[in-house]
Length: 133
Image (spheres, rainbow, N blue to C red):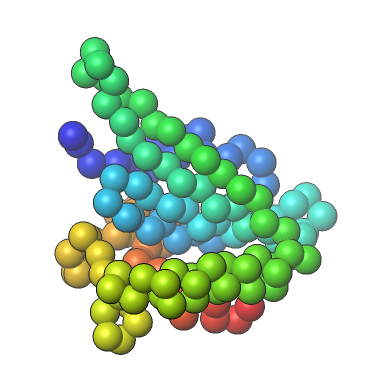
């Protein structure tokens, strides 16, 4: 199976002006965390899961799932996210390294960048996710 094309985002979202984007490659999926602005200058975040799938005929399709997160919900979202991550850490500690990071099949040092200079892209740690919320 070929790699995702980080530059081919034509169908990602035509609404809103994209101000900042962080792609996070996770196995066969890519998560895009995009900050966008409304016409009125309000900010919101879209989180898109994009997964490339091979069809029986050999062609490829991209499955996408997206949520829009508005600024008034950032704190509640972060609290709910932290609560479920903490639950998994308590119930399944074997899924985590001693430092608290998740055990991953993705080798460290994997390049997660767009390749076009618009974002450095990275593996987003839980702590990085919650900074500033």
